[in-house]
Image: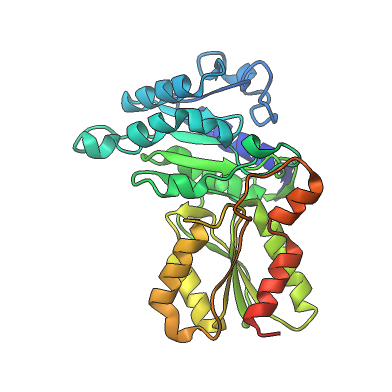
Length: 325
């Protein structure tokens, strides 16, 4: 085991798979000569050359379509969006092309493609560059949606996504690229669709994913000091969702808090709430509580950002609420 940054874990995943399979290539804005907008692809151009690490114009619709066509013809593209806010320009290609092609072709065309890049708030980037679309893509049949929270998961899940024959949305965070964590030197792959119980507990189940796992872990640690034992679950992927792990936990703790960065309507936490009340209603000793962003575009001012986004304080308040404290 060695400690490496999140960005390095992603690079290792791509590099290792590209060494094994010449059909894999990376394409996106600034991935080659600039070594990546966040230095995720640093050094990859030198190793693999311009045919496999490809700089594109600022034209997400165009290079997403090129990637989908390449995947239909036997290649395995990794398409990097500088931010998933820009994926909206390419959403027709992703949803009406990549996601539906296997079904529309009667099983003749797989689309083994990974769309990856940062999602969500990353500081003072204001309304158009601070959005979460995990639930948008998860609402689309044919797509898998992965949101890792640490370097170990990032590498293992990205390798799985690259090997997968289905199109995968792989969402990261600008605020996590510098995070460090222990990552094995030997080969490993994590299963997409299997959640991770980060901390076992008996009083409350707390479910989150992506960079908000930091908030979940901090809130759980603070509650432990008050003798509230929180079980923390990292979803890892939001399509598919590991409902079984969540329901099993709720049957043990009898309480559920869901923590998510996106807006409240039709969110991932909305779906989980429905599934849990359908399958574990008799085990609940309190209503399910969601901690999500307010239904507003994210502003520029730090004070307003703090007011709108979930945080540790709001999460602790939710845990106390389901504990009737």
